[in-house]
Length: 206
Image (tube, rainbow, N blue to C red):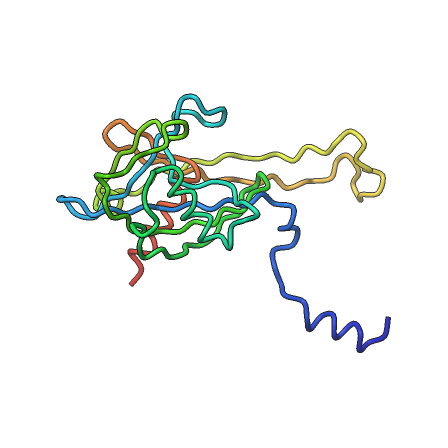
């Protein structure tokens, strides 16, 4: 390959996260609603009939479909499907920082306002219930943060003979932070709590 061909290829390339084509992509919406006590955050409780994470607290969202125009549209579609809300009642949707999970996922979070909260018709096959927490609570309450260590375990056929140090090679363990909030006996944790904490960080920026 000639230098000008290499330069052309490099110039036309659009950088992305290396290997991202192999990641599962999810989009979620952090829903805000205006209540008598002020702006509140809306949460879902996952149906007990679901195979994955039944009964856990989350935001509306899910895996992107090939038909989704982009990540924002995926978050809006999932919110419509799960909460039974009309598209025109989802307002001011803005992107938060996307997250890369150590489990092969990229999560694209958004925050937006929902109108007509009292008219929601949650999809009971996915959503057991919905509830709200005043935004003020999260502005005034720091999350508890705990750590999970993820230790690498090479497969049996890993070619240790090609690695300096062989089986004694010092593979680095990863550490994952898990965030927890507790409000009136409800535990909000995991990715939901991490997205929420990031959102609060943005609101507190000066």
